[in-house]
Image 1 (cartoon, rainbow, N blue to C red):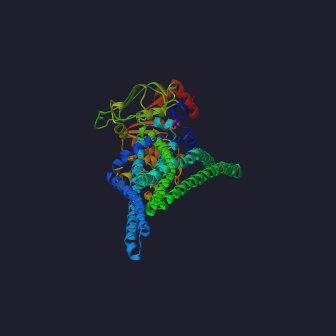
Image 2 (image 1 turned 90 degrees about the horizontal axis):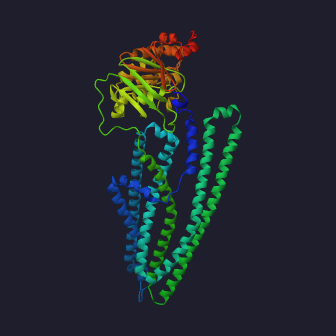
Image 3 (image 1 turned 180 degrees about the horizontal axis):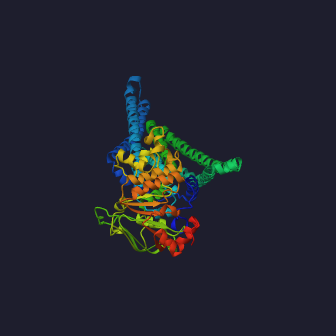
Length: 617
């Protein structure tokens, strides 16, 4: 069984609901807002794979911005034709200019639609590739990574953080780039139209930007505080829901609801302060922007009345000033999104940059074929990461011959499950060697090593889908006949036949619609269909009742024929038929032999047997 303490550091973790709730709260508390936008550069390779969409998005960003600026030129032509010296406009004479204005507006509409489509498509495509790449990379990381990083934190980066990046790529980045182009183009056009008025506009820019900086930091701080408090509320709710039966058993529903309500109210109060600060920022910015526009407009009207510029030029300049000022305001808002996405991308990059400690060597040695199923641990010492001073196994030597059935027994924390983890190369020992068919597994491809083993753990996780899907997980190319044979051997045929769709019946998330014993029998079938030369059984029948344990043990006895088998068991009755029983204590082999030999030695095994069988020690 997976033991607490030294042998199983992963145990004692909170359940999934608690882990996710705690992670939301903890991640929000330490989640940075980054001003270093270089982290977003990691998205460039993803965009480079879709050059046509990127080129189309860039093209229509430019054309949409140009069309927006072009509207001001068309408006100038219309106004100048209406107000020019000696002008006597008629409906027929001004119609062509309105056609020009309409044509530019149509070009703007078409360019904007295409800009939205291609920018959004490119952003969604990049995010989809990022999600797939990040998840595929996560699956290559070894267990030591997850000893340092919560699973909930990893899921948060795959969901929340990538969602933030997606919002930037599909919305904010498009708005930002368009406003940058509008600002540059508008200022350039304004200089051409009226250098004097442009200089006055530039003088007012710092006054307009000032409230964005004054209030922007406060808004971001309050936003972060709101998110932290809401995450705390979610954490409280998750913890309560995860223990709902206990909450109801002790009649604490009202207290739980009140606790969550207090957390939500605290979040709301902070959010109210954030909204007030943002409202002040928005009001100040609008007042200053339009105050500046009115002032510039008054100067322009004075110049037009003095004959220093045409009325069309004035109208064009005012429109350009409004567009440019609006672009500055919009950039101020989207800059916060850019910073937030940069921080999110830094966290995603931490995942992408993580290197698996267990990886295939550059030139892996091929395992002998056909497989013999011999395993050996030679003077192995191993301590789990983070606990280097507390080895799980110390100087362990164990040789298992091809086809031999070996049982590992001993008290909790003796190192039994660690042996399995080393054989599967989830970890590498700090000293000694682990051999498979005479090859040091560090010199082989981990995938090839694991293909020669089939594991049945004490609590073997199953997945959503049908029972057939779960058994086929053991070997993807297994035929239906092979799957049914494995199901029959695992004594799972009877309960599966009673399901509405038989073996094709969906079993729900983590197969929760099945009992513990039924899930374990499916896990055994999954291992049997793998047809691996080495079976690793970690308390494989512990979840079964006496009758089913007897039936499954008989099936396992048949499956062990011709295979090397290592069995971990606390119930000694399940290992009496082993060819050899290896007794472990404090990470070492202290005894080995048959049941009767070990009882006769009057050692640790004899004491364990006396406790379970009442045999004299």
